[in-house]
Structure formats: structure tokens, C-alpha cells
Amino acid sequence: MFFSLMRKPWFRTIAKYIDPYWITKQGVNSAYNHSPMVTEELIQRYYELALRDGSRDATLTRFSTYNTTEEPVDTARFNVPALIMWGREDSLIPVDVAELFNDALEQSSLVIYDNVGHIPMEEIPNRSAEDVSKFLLEVYAAN
Image (cartoon, rainbow, N blue to C red):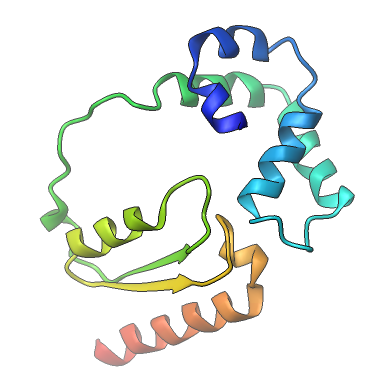
């Protein structure tokens, strides 16, 4: 809900004046796919980050340019191995965007995690670290 509200100019106008706790809580639960690892301590960490100087302005600016059109990126310039890690239940950026990245990058490897949201490295730290290690070993062995 928060992310769709933040795309609306009227909401961004008032967002800087409201306490972001409920927004933070909803956003964290959504980003983590309502994982049991979401605790009050984790919500408080994100809430405190939201209250830091400059955080709110940066967030509002980011969402104010959310759907702007940019020039197409020449993906041929990216000629290095890339690991794309994506949660299938990512509620912020749909999993089909991972497929677009994978199709656009010549040397990419794609790992999609079932039952994982937007933050695989925190939601499944051991599994995602193993995948990074495996990827780096493969890249190192190829060179």
C-alpha cells in the first residue's frame, strides 16, 4: 500500500509531516514477504533509518521520479559476470524484471528464490551466501 501511495503526488506532499512508523511497518512486512523473521526490532531499525536526517527527503525524491522515462541502456557495455538474485514473492519489483535483466546481460546467472520477498540476503542469508560463493568460484575458475 505504501509504495502505491508514494507514487501519488498528493500523498508525497503530506508524507513528510506524518510519523512514518505505520508506513515502515507495512513496508517491511511487505518487502520481507510477511516472513516470521520480521520482528519489532527489525521494524524499529528501519523506522530509525527513516527518521535520520535526509532519509525522508531522499525517499520522497526517489518516488517523485519513479515512472520517468530514461534513454535505453546499452547492455553490451556490461561485459562482466553478474549474479541476479530475486525473491519470487518480491512485492516491490516483480520477478519478471529479473528475467529482463537476465535476458539483457550476456554473462548473467539468475537465481529465483521461492517463498522469498525483496531482500533474499536477509530473508535466507545462508542460502543466498552459498549462491554468491558458488557464483564467485565459478567466475574465478573461468578466468
